[in-house]
Length: 513
Image 1: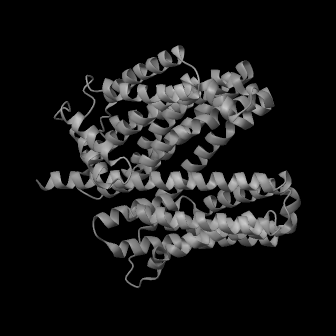
Image 2: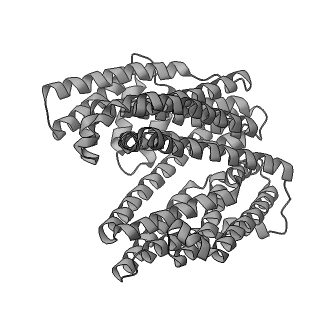
Image 3: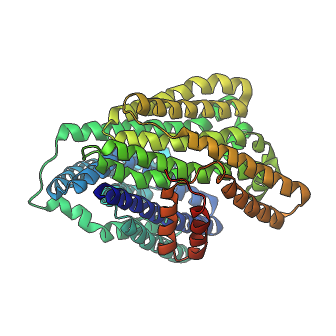
C-alpha cells in the first residue's frame, strides 16, 4: 500500500512538473516572439545584429563559466532532498556558487579589460562588451537558481519568476527603444529580466551562506559536472556544425533549405525536452533510494510513451502539410525544403527520445557513460557529414543528421538495457506508429477532398480524434493514463470537461496493466 501511494505521488509530481514547465515554455516563447518582432520592426539591421550577437555571447560564455555545474547541482539537490539532508544541499550550493562566481567574474573581467581589443574583432560597440560582461555573471547566477529549483521540483516558482522576468524584459526594452536608446534598450531589458528572476529566487543562493552546510565530495561533484560540461559542448557542436559544414561544402542555397527544415522541426523537440526536465529531478532522487531502479525504469517508459504520443502525430501533420507550412513561414523559394522534412523530423524525434534516455543515464549516476554516448553521436555525425554533403548537398546533410541521431538513440537504448537492466517499452512506440499512419491517412483523405486552411484545420481535428480512438483496439492505454486524465480534470482551468470526458471513455476500454 505504501509503495502504491509513493507511485501515485511520483506520478502526480511528474504531471505537475510537466504542466508548469510546459506553461513556462509557452509563455517564454510568446514573450520572446513579441520581443524579437518588436526589435525587428523598430531597430535597423545593424542594431538588431548587435543585440543578437551580444545575447549569443552572454549565453555561450555563461554556459562555459558554469562548467556543467547546473546539471550536477540539480541532480544532487534532488538526491539530498529525497533523503532529507538539507545540510548537504547547502554545501553543494555553496561549492557551486563559489566556482560559478569565480569563473563568470574572471570571464567578465577579461571582457572589460580587453574590450578595446574584442570590440573590432566582434564588430560590436565597446560599450556593448561591458553589457556582455554583466550578462555573463547574471546568466551564471540564473543557471544556478534554476538548477536548485529544478532539484527541489519547485517548477511553479520557475514559471512565476520567469513570467515576471519576461514582463520586465519587454517593458524595459520597449521603453528604452522608444526613447531612442537603440541596441542598448533590448540589452538592458534582458539584463533587467535576469536580475528580476535572480532576485525573486535569491533564497536559493542564500543557502550557500548557511553555517550548517556540509561540504560535498569535490571529486564526485566535478566528475559529474565536467561530464555534463563535455556532453553539452558535444551537443552544442552537434547543433551548430551542420550549417557551417553545409555552407562550406555546398553553398548558401543548400544551407538555407536545410536551415528552414531545422527551424520548422525544432518545435517537435519541445515536448520531449519538457518531459525530460520534469523527469530528471525525480529520477535523480530515486537514485538515493534502495530499489529505486525499477521506479526509474517505469517513469522513463511513461515519459517516452507520452512524448511519442504527442510528437509522432505532430510529425505526420507537418509532413502532410509541409508545403502549406513552408509557404506560411517562408517564400516559395524554400518549397524544396519539404523533401528534407521526412529525414530531419525523424532525426529530431530520435534526438528527443535519445536525450530522455541519456539524461536518465546521468540521473542513474552514470555521468561518464552519458557523456561518452553524446560524444559518440557527434563523432558519427562528423564522419558522415562531410562525404555525404559533398556528394548529395542538403540531402547528404539531412541523411547525416538522421544517421547520427539514430546512433545516439540506439547507443542510449543498448546501454540502459545491457548495463543498467532497463527494459524500454518499444512496443508502445510501434503501436503509436500504427495509429500515426491512420492519422496521416485520414488527414490526406480530407485534404484530397477539400482545400483551404479552414478545411485543413478541421481535417487535423478529425484525424486527431481518429488517432486517439485507433489506439484503443491496439490496447495502448493504461490505468496510469486514467490517473493523468483525472489529475488534469481536477487541476486544469481550461479543458477540464474534455479531460473528464476522455477519462470516462477510456475507462471503459483501458487495460489493467
